[in-house]
Picture 1 (cartoon, rainbow, N blue to C red):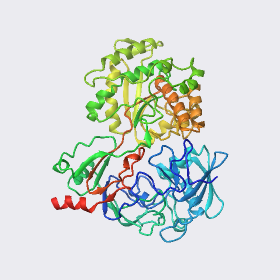
Picture 2: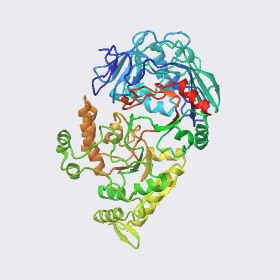
Picture 3: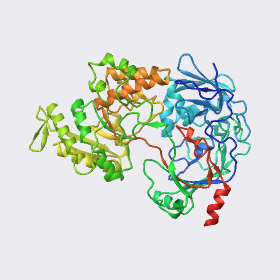
Picture 4: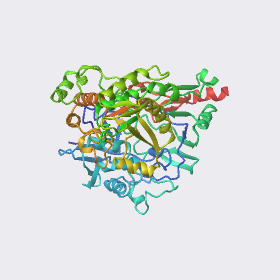
Length: 581
């Protein structure tokens, strides 16, 4: 049955006749310019080339679906007027909006969608799109407005890339061109903006399309309010921050770090505002220490726990990151899927069949990584780690940790960039105190990828988080994914309890049932110490000149705040600042 939106886990908040999202101002005025920085030294305007493509191309192209910022798992039609999930849970049927048009006036058709997916499947140069495209098997055209996207897995895995990553391209424009070849010719689009001017590696300027076909769609009312959006390229973050201080930029968005460089008179006067942008579509940890559980001695849970105790997160946070980070105590930190306290009744029902196969602490203790003072040696952690290693059969002899077979305990950490090496060096020092021979091997990108693909490693730091909801569980933890080509089960986790809980989460049809399965899974993963979550995903920091209007109910976008598409230029505020200068 066709609907105006879709959610697999909960009822849609907005009915078919909704007028606009609650967290925007539907009467926001149009006008003005927004100037933003980009650290991307772009070389192309092709939408399928990432990361070489110009910043802001998402303003030019539409996606089939749009995620709501105030619901955890809701998708509403954008290019698609209506959506239906197939009974086989392997297909999604779309009906395009009858008014959907390209900027040249041509209608958007099913053929455009098929052309886009065929181009991606043929040469998925974009890393983002390449990760998304394997979930899609084919696009079958029903008529000009209706088509079926067939997936290789549950549609839940396909909705997020359909909404976030995959821009629909015009077949009549790209038909005699290659969208995977770099070009600086502004392409034909269908979105609220078009490219007005561009200079390779320096800037790209977008202008609002006044006759944009989708301006009155409920998902778009109150959005896309700036007449002009300009991305200026800065190759150095320090220079970009200085440009903001001088008023050459309007906003600065920074992930994972406190804003420390804006102690200025403008801030004291309230003209330069510091805050955060709400972004909860990513959850869990941003960085993980991966241990290869396929290899001895990392196949021993006591050894893995000892290694986790030796990692002094608080010391690193103080010494290397000036206290800016927060430790992740959950695989699904900052979400309803994270385990807290002791297991609930619904969690215990899922866990009880595996009581004799999982740690008893899963049932009796709330998990939390031990905290340290962050100063000096982590003596309590190292003492406890040494005791666990001794229980596992490892003994110190002449400063070297020796196993029952007489072999020394060694670890090789793979690293690609100096930042990873910098983070591993203090950990290597702590492991040396335990008698573990540790070394960091710096490898170039191709060798790094090959070694990960061949599972040829002891340990490494992985960058990555989970989406909301965490549909990627099967690829991350299931035993079937241990050696699968697309898997990121890098730790080699394979356990019947984990498999069952992943399957329960995947089969969930309500938010509560998926949350119970994920929380139970979280406990098993944490108490088994398969891998070590490091710093938690956090909202990005936002600094901006106070010359913009913001929706009164913006805070209701509890998962994704409407920035910058829901903001607007306020000439009165802007004049106050400009006249004072």
